[in-house]
Image (cartoon, rainbow, N blue to C red; front, side, top):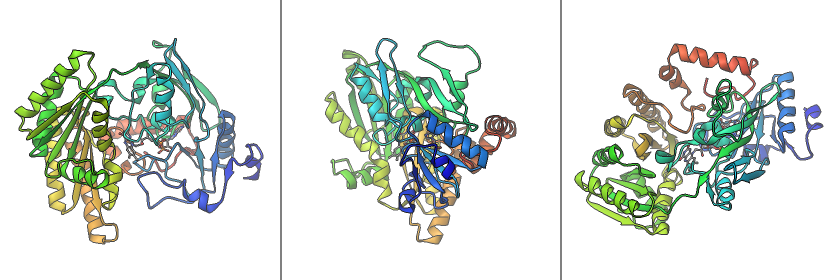
Length: 450
Ligand SMILES: Cc1cc2nc3c(=O)[nH]c(=O)nc-3n(C[C@H](O)[C@H](O)[C@H](O)COP(=O)(O)OP(=O)(O)OC[C@H]3O[C@@H](n4cnc5c(N)ncnc54)[C@H](O)[C@@H]3O)c2cc1C
């Protein structure tokens, strides 16, 4: 690949095995990850074009990579391929008049939020990983998060992008216009495309006025089912800007990790927030409190102190790293329509009991999007087998309930076996036709999704 190296800036191509090791997996820790021939850290769109032209000419697989915080094996390296890292592309320009940010893909979500805040604006999508995931990765996975229950997911904020196709062609789609229906919605096609259709090299993101200060409610329940019932009662009449659920296992794992004084005996905990303006926030919190009490909450705590509220949101965000300390994890992301949420959480408890495995549940409950996490000892072959069985059964259950196998993390490599059942033959065929049209040689992220 000397001819490619010659076209790229000094230091862009990394071939040292120790360095490559750091780019082989995302947070799904895929044991099947291959050894790429190189990691290329692009510095500009032209570098990305050079890589893709060379890869097309030589039929070499390319795995686009943001910050590697994915939870579905989407950026797992492919044997003999190139890992194309966007981490060095970090420019941002905020235009407060159009209320947009023009941003390169390697900037972290938290950095986009900070740049927007400096102009009195807000970029809402807030995956729990917001301090470690890239904005390009967010667009490529259509990331969700905690405030999405009220403010929507990444795609709702992507107005336009620059994207490089497998053959090296750079396209500009959409732009800083709030309304634009000219042509097919191609911008949206690339959002959530998990590195299969092109490499995103720039995004135009919609910003909104800064969020009003939020009030927070924390309620403790005697069972996860009663907590899920309270979620339904709340979402029927109110629009909280956060409605998160944690079960006993995840509460205890977080308490072990943070020692912040969470109730270790609680079977479930809801963390809800209201950012309604002025006195309306207190009213919304009071209504949520009544719903929680009516559904058997044993304790309800409320606060309008932003720092105190943020501590509870941080506890929820700490759930994945905290649970990772208990063993290996199989990460689920199943989602159902809200009325099926109590049935889903009941069914997950049953699957855990039948397979004698621990399944911790954390959930963006207000969206019906749950993260059952199968915790297992990877050195125990029998437990590993039971964990994988339970993992599949949770996705089967979600499908039986008319739900999805992934609400925000993407299909990647981890959930690929369930995609045909979820989409059905006709939609799978159409998806393959779109992939073939844009990437006829199949060099972009082979082995992921399809
Ligand atoms: C502790 C923790 C909490 C999390 N919480 C949430 C959450 O609340 N909500 C949520 O949605 N996710 C969450 N995630 C998952 C993850 O952070 C998101 O999926 C995030 O969007 C991935 O961004 P990344 O930059 O790390 O992408 P990567 O992991 O590097 O890549 C993800 C996918 O996008 C593709 N890709 C990356 N960049 C580009 C690009 N520029 N062009 C084309 N394709 C690209 C990759 O090929 C891969 O398929 C969490 C992860 C962790 C570790």
